[in-house]
Amino acid sequence: MESQVRGGTRWKRFAVVMVPSVAAAACVGVGLAQGALAASFSVSGQQFKVSAETLHGDGFAQYGGIDNVYTAVDGKTKTQVPVAVSSFENATITNMCQSVKTTIPVLNKTFYLRLDAGKDPKKPVTAENLYIDVAQLDADATFNQIDIGVAVKDKTRGPAVKEGESVLPGGFAQQAKSADLSNVEQTAWATTAGTFKLSGLSMRLGADPKMECF
Image 1 (cartoon, helix red, strand yellow):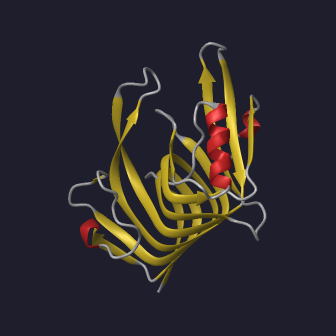
Image 2 (cartoon, one colour):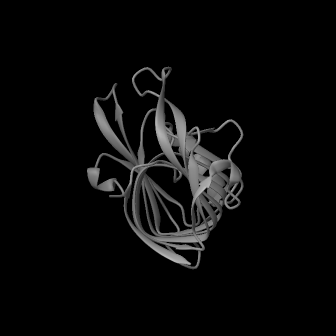
Image 3 (tube, helix red, strand yellow):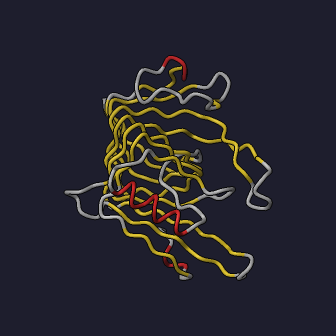
């Protein structure tokens, strides 16, 4: 069974992130490009943008959850935010872009950090056990063998719910054998992956608002 879906789902989880330190981001980026690191990314108290030309994922599950994020004001206070956890056992992504907007108080200026990867269709971005926290998602999507309305604890596809992750009480999930998304534009809070390989990684920092992915 196939289901076509188009819309702006306000949930939350999907993508890789930039860290406040450019030097640290560069080191992490190089490691990921070489496929050497597990990935767990978030920007304290901030959302970030991710776009992709295509995303193919095998073993898909999506369910509601709650994230604890640090506010950008003091970096200490945690705030609970509702999320939609999109998880994939394996994912292949082409022409992926990720950008974050950050204001530096000392300089009183806004800067943009942008990562691009997987521009060559023959060398896409790949990930295993990928979890994405999405605040908003817009895409054209096709799901193969989709099952909607199963209890989170009874789902049989996608990676297992991570230990310590908060899911909505009595929540339900949707799952599919595979999912194909195109023209993806999403705003996310965090991304976690067992491995995340960024082929053809390019990173830029600048003050031009056009550096944002969308």
